[in-house]
Length: 280
Length: 266
Image (cartoon, rainbow over all chains, first blue to last red; front, side, top):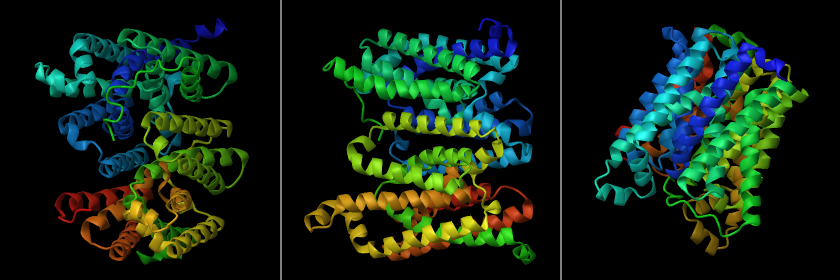
């Protein structure tokens, strides 16, 4: 077991997995609170076009994903409330983004392994460059989040009152979208475009049902995220399966089983989110 | 240009995409009217696990797709509206389905080509058997839609009144979800799991903005769907680029100006 840890690719996998799980868990808390799970889904699909298109202009797929998701986040941030409830329009744009991804993939390489890596993650083949980039972007994300923490929390829980008190709600939501884009890009590295929910939403959504105060919820979310990532990586190494399957499996089963069980064990504790039905 | 029609794999692609485009346009229209586009998304993701599981077991992926999507249709249909609106729970269920799909593909000694073709379609490689299966299920779906056409339309536009007049709306809803599941399963062969919107929703959403009345809208949607898939197969055969890229581009490229310019509102 310890012998495995001497391999460099495993060290890289654990290091980047740890950093990314922490960032995802914290940003995920706000994603759940602000009912923006769908935005995370959308950004990850757009990231697919970025990851495959990156090779065309000669940058790494991680850089390409960063560029695409941040541009999309800016667009979504500025459109704001106007894009809510427009399933058909968003679905068409996402399909087009994925279609572009297919084209880029074809033009760049005929190797379908590349596509599967982007779609389902490639944590066990993280390069030192990817690791460095994810550390830098994690530090930036966490620092920015720390600076805007209080106003963001206020604006997320009660946007009308926050607005009335002079909190720049619109600006905050654009900044948060950019942070979300950076987080999604990192999550793609670990679990892939299609399983982003496992790291971004599942830990925070589970924690939300169990803990009450923001700090306790965030802490629990981080612990869960780390548990899923480390557990998934260890299972993948021992059972020789795909890491993203084990991470996503642990995360979704924990949510789907723990939440109802917890409600039976201690009912009347769960406080519904202030805006559970805001995003429709 | 027409000489590519001599190849049997191109002929198969044209025949299969004919059935898929027609059934996707019709069912897509009802999905839009009933506000169920999200279910199309859901079925395709669940279907991925089914297709990948079938590949692993050495069965034709279309059977895995049909089994999983129909099971999902019955599940969503019987759980009712309440659960459908809880997006986090549903998102996490998809994630689990996709994760199992990834596992099945991994167990299948890792041919990434299979994953790629389930995700993005392989109409140019469709086998003669699958053309027959596609034709059978498409015709079956179209037949059921024709039989149920009036009550389905009634319950889609005004469920309360339809219910009061004795239309079995709940049963119709489940039957329709199963039809949608079959449609998604056959469409996956053309455009893949991830681009299902391009054939299922794109043509009908464009048609709705341009003409009024169900018959005209469905007619235009079928025309658009056929146009997208046939033109795309031609372009793909000529340029050697993926069919699903062309379908996605055409579908979006026609929808966007129509959405922005057309005055007709649904």
